[in-house]
Each structure stands twice: as C-alpha cells, then as structure tokens.
Amino acid sequence: MTQPSFDTQAFRTALGTFTTGVTIITAEAEDGTQVGVTANSFNSVSLDPPLVLWSLAKNAMSLPIFTETKHWNVHVLSAEQEPLSGRFASRGEDKFSGLVLDEGITEAPLLHDCTARFQCRTAFAHDGGDHIIFIGEVLAFDQSELPPLVFQSGQYALAARKPWEGVNLSSAEVPIECSYSEDLLGYLLGRAHFQMFNKMQDLLTKQELNDKQFFTLSVLCINDNLTLDEINAHIDYTGRSVTEDEMAQLTGRQLLALESNGDKPRYRMTADGREASLHQIAQAKAIEESLIDNLGAGEVMALKLLLKRAINSTDPGLPDLWSAVSEKQ
Image (cartoon, rainbow, N blue to C red; front, side, top):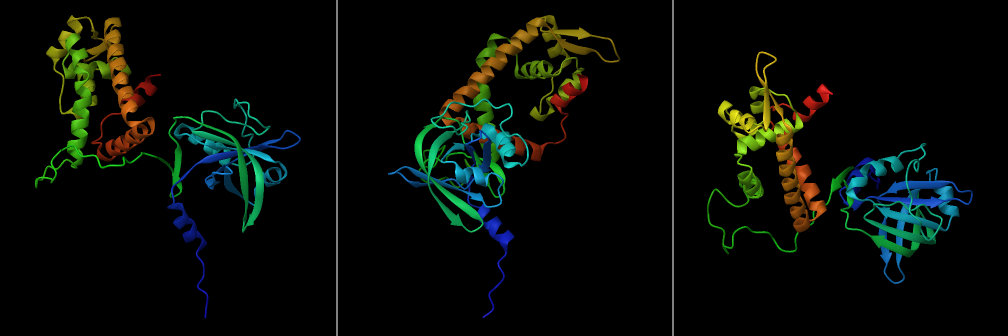
C-alpha cells in the first residue's frame, strides 16, 4: 500500500487554526550572554507540582544556552507588545538593546509590562522531532490586567472575551418577526454611537454648541486654518454640513478667528476655542474610560480595530484629516 505524501505546509496551516497566546522566553548563559525567543508553543502541564512547557527548534542559535542553563522566564505578551514579539522573533540583532529589565529571582532576563510572567527552572528536556521540549518548574509568577496578544492563522490577533450568557437588547423571550432585528449591524453601530454621543450633550449644552459646531471645533483642533468647504468635506460622513451662519456664531463668540488672505476665508482656532475643545476631549476620554471599566481594555481594543476595519471598508473617499496635518509640518 502506497503511503500518501504528507503536505507539511498544509499541516502548518491546519495547526495555525489553533489560537494561542504569544510569549517570549528568556535566559542568560554563564558568561552573561542574554538570549530570548518568541514562542507560541507555551502551555501548562501540571498544577501540583506547578509545571509548564514550551519547545524550541533544534536549529535555533539560542538552543545551546537554553540547554545548558537551568533557569528561564516565560513572558505572556500584552496586546501592546507586538513590536517586542517581532524583535525577539528575528535573528542577529541585540534583542535586549534599550530594554529596561526587572529584577527576578534568577539571572534570567525579566521583561516588564506583560500580561503574565513565569520564572522557571528546567525540570525535564525531551526530544520532540525537530524541536526540544522544555518542561519547567514554576518558581514564581505574576500577572496584570493587560489584555494578551494572540496569534491565529499566521497573524497577530486581539482577544475579546465572550460572556457566559448571550447578550440580548430585548427582554422578549421570543424574537418578534421583523426585518429590523437587534442583530442588524447598522442598528447596533448607530445605537452605540448615539448612546455614547448623548453623554457629550450636557457639556455641549453648557458650551451652547450644536453637534455641527462641535464637529467643526473637533476638525480644527486637529487641522487648523481650513476653509468652510474643507471643514464640510471632513464632516461629510455625518450627513450634515455646517453653514456660514453657524460659523459666524463661532467667530462672534471668539471661538474661531476668520482670516481672508486668499480667495476663500479660512478659519483658525482661538485660545478660547482650544480650551472648549480640551473640555470636549476630556469628556470623550472619560466616556471611553467608563466603557473600558465595563467591558475591559482588551474588548475595547478589539472593538476599535473592528470599527477601523469597518470604516475602511465603507469609506466613500473622505479626506485624511491627520495626513493633511503631516503635510503641513
């Protein structure tokens, strides 16, 4: 019977469907040489005694040090540490250059700002095909509230926790047969926007500003010295446009200054206008912090990423507000 050929690349792809965290394993040789590698092979083995494992390719340059030393540290990376993961996944550079290390219980380098850290002593090392499997006894560990970095299907990902029970906006036991269900994406995006924006209304009422004037100040706070047409181009996605009368109200209140150096008048922020915007930014950040407290930093980070992807995929071609600032600098 002919043995079918084994597709190694397809096998790698299939393994990649298993979502893992991302870790950096570090150690130090007797001569003080520090090594570190990015690995997603980390896993738990036993609670009593506390054992963990990870594996390293036999052709890895750092293998002799990990084989000879008795101590190594496992760092479960946070979502903010993707650049660090890339640094330790590369070859030939001083991976620890510029890094501030924490003091550990052994000589192995200890990175900080991680989701979790495990300081280990080699208990066993086993041959595992083209890898060596290291099983370590955990001597000390710590963790933080930072959301973890995730790896899935060959690329980095963000983890959003799924609640134990489903989330329903309606208390109806049986969903009503209706085209507009609570799972309609447009409804969810719209309701989330208006509910969050509603929390800005008290401040805007105190500032005697309508939503279009708020959008105007927000645009000019980022990219100053624009014409009315340019301002409206940046807020076109709202389906609204600010009028000359509304701009006159802002200049009359000395929140904006009007300059007529070219064919069309341009608007600049005044000191009072920037102060009003700073209060708006502070309120917006307070609303975001409240959402992070309720959902968690990882969920909000994942939400931002998905919203950016949704915006990119539906963008009608709006001008880039931030790149225009870079071009002026």
